[in-house]
Length: 309
Image 1 (cartoon, rainbow, N blue to C red):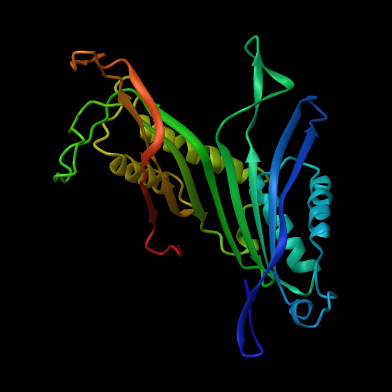
Image 2 (image 1 turned 180 degrees about the vertical axis):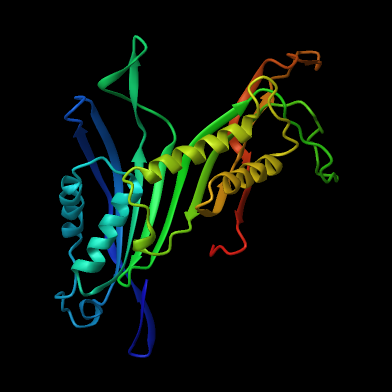
């Protein structure tokens, strides 16, 4: 937020437009194939518009309706398909360069996961279905050209039915959880990573570069969580698996400087019941009661030594 000292008070302000929904369709003229994205865009501007607060003078305000219309106009100007990251950068660059009052623009985008469908084993030319996890990004651009770019994943639901345990933890009079080397492991990954590019000039000029990086990171996270397809990999805790996923991401994607992961432990509890005599009837290890409340909450970040978190 823009900070000012007004009449002896510290004052911070910003303004913007949230949840602008836009869909953009492209048609490849050679193949006839259609491409589509749907984005939810939020914009926040840091600007010199203090007079609107203290002198009833709105002459320095970029109207939020103008911000909304700019989203649609800039989407139209994109003649070729591009990543959410590139669109966020283009929007932020426009606001900081076009308006002298704006010092910093912050653009957040959540991309809805429309995926091309296959019919009879062939990709459909214009058919799409809605997937699950969402691609997110935030571009912060200053008038100087300084850039902070982050991307992420929301709602990546993962589950494995074995190769997980939890033992050796602190036990006291309130501990009822038994130790185990055999349990189901389920989570819904929220990931956010920061790219190392720190200026507009340093950003790769390939329109789908960041889409490819998003898919690379998602693959690394999934592959590390599950392990090799025939044998898997043992998880001694969600914490251990989270760390291995974060480390693998930094090792395999060199232009990412830091990553933060949040992985709730979504429980699948054995569905044991008691009969009228009070005896416990066990269903072995194949019937469970799925529950997402309450759940364990595990969150951590990992960065390179030179990274600015």
